[in-house]
Image 1 (spheres, helix red, strand yellow):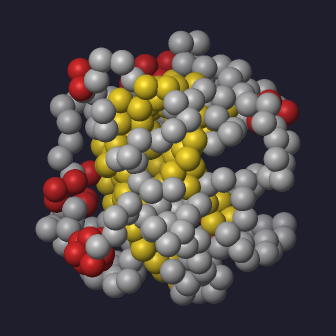
Image 2: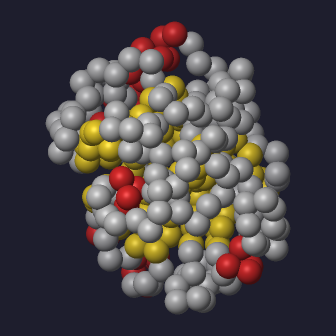
Length: 295
């Protein structure tokens, strides 16, 4: 249902660029941010609502059957929108429907990479990066809702995601508890990027960068020698009730995922929450250059 991303047409040169994550030349072309406060809405007159993803979207992305509202596609952007109480009645082998669990979701999902349709595998290294814009009214509302903008799973949909990029009105956008963009800085375009190795032993790592840190300086977060096939709270030393089996498949969702709060739907603003994304890339990294071990 969901997964880690890869370039639609992966060439050797693209692999080399991806591997250069830590160098200023690597992602410099991808880090220019749009002017603050308002996204470029004039690029397309009418966003398209369809279950068919456009050609420019990374290969093997699909619109999840659990999306209560279908994402829209406008020029080079994916537009996600969700209102209070939105949910899908779709249920599958992953578990009960979102309406049953009081989950609100509008996402695109990925579980295969490259033209060869290879699955994400334990022992492989990946780069995920995307630009995002969050409606500043969500921050101004002071909503206590916590929303995932990206969520990694093992073995289909689970109540215990491996990692997630989280949004809340108090802390802004965070990854593994580390701030990517503060709440006061939301309202313009920002870029998130993470490198990780899927590992069931201490060879796993994650390294996160945002905005200017993509060009120069240290990453915002770097952790090495961790298990990355377990929920991240377990990997970071928090007590877990049990050891989860090593997933035989991995997936990722991008968009809006709002889990219930005290058994009820997340308190989103009455007019809803809008999130925009573009320049979504997922690559397998064959070479890692300039990685920071721990920070």
